[in-house]
Image (cartoon, rainbow over all chains, first blue to last red; front, side):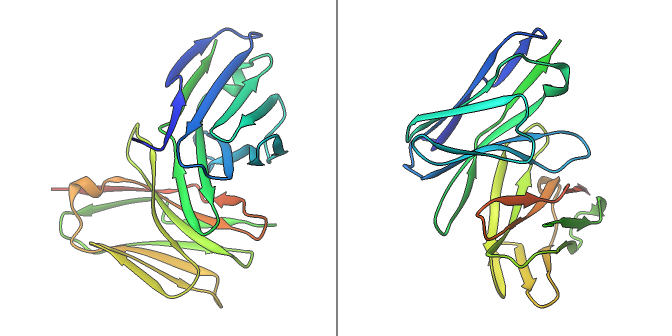
Length: 111
Length: 108
C-alpha cells in the first residue's frame, strides 16, 4: 500500500475546461498539500489543508481551488484550465514530526 | 523571506566518488528536509533533521544551525544514485520552501 495515491497520473485537457485532480491517503495524516513542479522552479505550494474543511492558500493559488470533505481525500480543481497550468502536480501528506510523503505526481498538459 | 539555495545545480561524478551537495537557507528552521527525485519519478524523503547529523546507508546529512547550512553527502557513489536532490526548509508555519534541486549524474 503506497499510503498516498494521485489520480489521474496523466491528463491532457483543452484550455477553458475544468479539471480535478485527486489525492487519496490511507495514513490518516492531518496535513495535505498540493504542489506544482516546473522547470527552473522548486516545488511551489498551491494550497494546503490542516484538517477536514480547513484549507489555505499557498504561494501560487490563483486559478486553483481545493476541497477536503474527508480526511483521506484532497481535491485540486482548475476551474478553467490555461496553458500556464501545464505542469507536474504533486500531492504530499505530513503529520507532526513525521516527515513528508509525496504522491507519484500528475502530469497535466493544457492544450 | 524564507529562501533556500542549493549548489551546485548540476553535478557529474564517476562511480565510487564522494559527493557533496550544499543547501543554504535564510530563515530559522523547525526542520530541514532532503528529498530525492529520479527522472520521471516521484519524490522520496531521505532525511528530516533539525540538528547534527543523520546517516542512512551511504547517505549522510549534516546541518549547521548557526550558519544556516546543510550538506548531503553520498559515499561510494553509484549510477543508481543519479537523481535530482532537493533541499527544503520547513519553517515555523509548517510549510516547506524548496530549493530548485541539484541534478546528479554518476557514470560507471
